[in-house]
Image 1 (cartoon, rainbow, N blue to C red):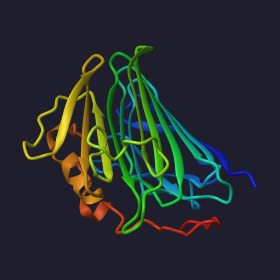
Image 2: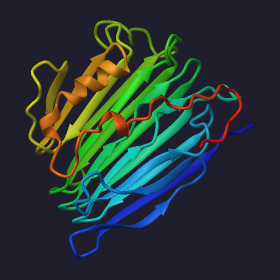
Image 3: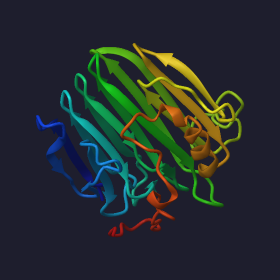
Image 4: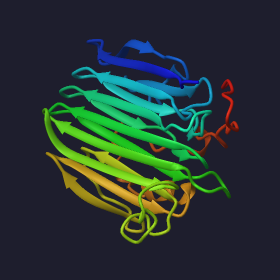
Length: 272
């Protein structure tokens, strides 16, 4: 039995009156999209990713295409964590994000964590294309295993191009089944949660946050963090509070789902 193939599309454009409109909002299969009110109601558009069914499972091929036209502003969040699960066939799941941000446009990509459940194998590839004057705040949180279970495998890659020039190509391969050494001192050092922020905004981190910062490209900064669990990882990333630009606030506890729905494999259950 083959997995599910699905592609969702988002296109945001300025309306000429200081607000951003969604010219295209097309979900597909397990990738459901919902319009939402922006937290600050400042004219930016807000899209929430909603899981319509359990995904990704082994063998799935999922893709999200996001295009932020010149001058537009878009915030993308998710209603719950993305949980990678084993499928009926022993094949990895593939999840691709293609994010394009035009001149003087702004994208804030702030989904809930990706969790690699026991027995799963996920290949995640984020491709970001930035115009020279584009702004971005891209946040990724990756967690190995649900509570009190062994981890699955999560191979991820982040490539960033600025004005068509490759400025970052970073890969990690962690979890059960990954090449030896993934949990050693050179990679995770025994931690189970990995996160990163990529931003064009000036950074003034909290001195207590367990993060490291690296300049990449023209005006871009990559911040990385390791933590023993998802809660500690979120606290570490939230320590960079001052990098959140006007118009985007850090999510409050009320914004966060208490718990993601975690259906058991191998079947595929419908979401809410």
